[in-house]
Image: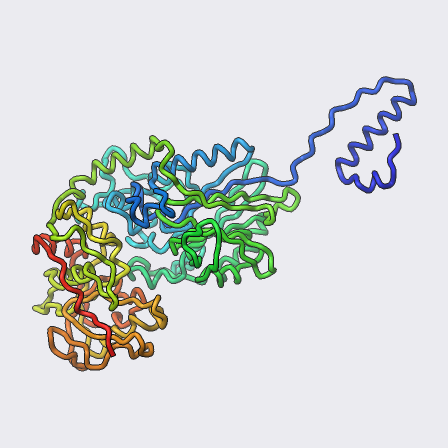
Length: 594
């Protein structure tokens, strides 16, 4: 047997050694007249390890499927979502990977709880944590809505325990089944950029290293929205510091590499906006914070699982070294699951990005419901029914819409502002508010009805945050500054960023053509039918989120003599009861002019 130079050139490594040895054995056997038994060719070791990564984001406690006619209940017309179906899809996807010899890990990019439907919120989101734990979630970054009930409550979500909430007072009930206390999440929360101010320790571990059976390591960094303090209540993040996502993640890269981790994935609660929101499995013209974050992240980071913007996209963006990097998001409410096939080079331990692919799969409702998740949902539906089904009033129209008119005022916004203005819990020292302000982003759905009858559950769907109402003093000058902040700062100067507060007790005109900072028409502001006076002090009411300067309204932080009243949902519910039946009023409080 002879091997030419060309032959030896083409043979490399272990395969070459094996063939040469076999050839020499044959030559020696023939030379001595012996019998040659050809040994079985050794199976070459694989060059890559394929790992399945399944990801969700922005679940927001949506255990039951949403209406398929709503944007939160379908993907491009296909009914989607529901925890029972999500659990089944995850099981099926893992089984398909296992059949190929692949191992799997399931992760999330924040906002799993908070702003949840009543089915979860009535029990402090304990049902959602239980459901996600049961469907195999392993690692999750912390989103801004995880702080809706404060960081102490978020720690309870991880570690377990029950709240002494009076067994259902304020329409909430922790641990409703005494025989089965809340044990906390089986998955691990990560938050690399949230620190305690006094100790500089992180609220949760900054990263987790997952070691697979063949020794391959993947490092997951959990990243919370840096802007969280501006969009949650101040009390919820008191004593915490939120640092820059890019700088924080980059500092962790050398730490992970020292621990032998070459494959790194960031679970980021921040995202982008594709030009075509229907293109959930591609990335047309994507914009938003994710662009700058991707550009700034260390090239050693191999993939970004993102969220926050409730968009579905599947992108390959260039890192600083001009190398492709996967950037994905799975929409919201469990409507999509991102399946990533991480291809890891066995020689280097690093992700082979050219062979790493992703697919956003719709969580269709044509699969069997997961029995365990169904049982959990049925249990809590029974427990929440007395709260949810209580009729609190009637409306004379099928629904009250949150859709704004040209001035960005809505019928439902007016109803909510009227309810806050009428709430007696914010009256203190004989001072009754004369103006109410409501942030439009806090109105989460139209007010629906059952043939005109409105239940507490339907009201809660509109206002699910359990914010407190706060009355305070503001001068005419401060109110002018507040109104201009609807069109400037983080809320401007472009029209898509405008955030017009829903109001009661005040009327005014704004000019779309005017420059930012000067959009409110001079002399147009009236309170109780009288012109606003700069030096006069007015008593106003809003929720504690806006009171802390949330949604880009720092003028509220300059107010004085603040007094906390009851919950916004209670004011809303009580107003509907007191004005039964309610007829939507005209949207004539805010106008456009010059």
